[in-house]
Image (cartoon, rainbow, N blue to C red; front, top):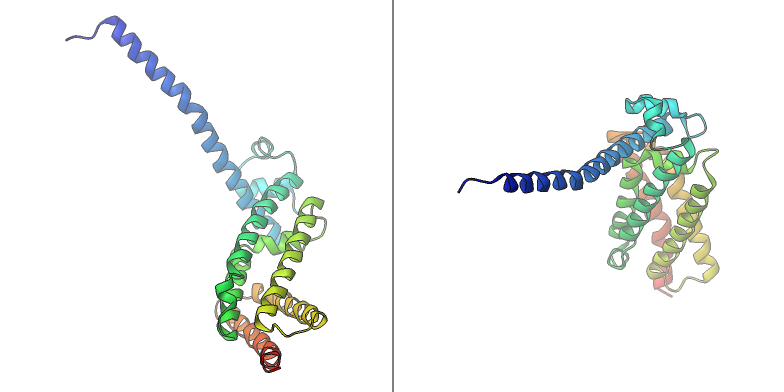
Length: 225
């Protein structure tokens, strides 16, 4: 049966309604892609110049957009850093949770070190902007505070891990050892991030050797008490 004018009008109305409903979703998707593009560009700029020396113009150039386009999404460099820092901190918390799983801590010491260190090192290598932003000068206060909380939580996780490996260790000794492990890890991370390829792998291996030789006597001694 041929379609009437009313049928055609109804179909046209439905198409118009569908188009009106999908348009905001398309705009939202485009906006999300642009934000991701700007954050990736900011990460590159922060890594090269540090947060303090970075500028919105440099970030816009890196993203291949005009400063005006950038300002449609972020009012200033601080807002970009806060958004990027928030995403990186959430990812870091997830990584820490995966690294310090109880089943990892129940492994023999060499395997436990691999299970804990590998995801932590991989996160920092894959997200160099995290190190540049969290340890740079002049970063927004909100990021600084959240990073302090992350570090405090990690210190607690290291302490808990050490307690599971050396349950007879006195609380004061446990604190000292945990702080030493964190200090060794952070110092080694500087070297690891400064190199690539085989050189990076060599420094990762050295870090594990240092921690193994440091912790093995402690773990063995306390288990024999």
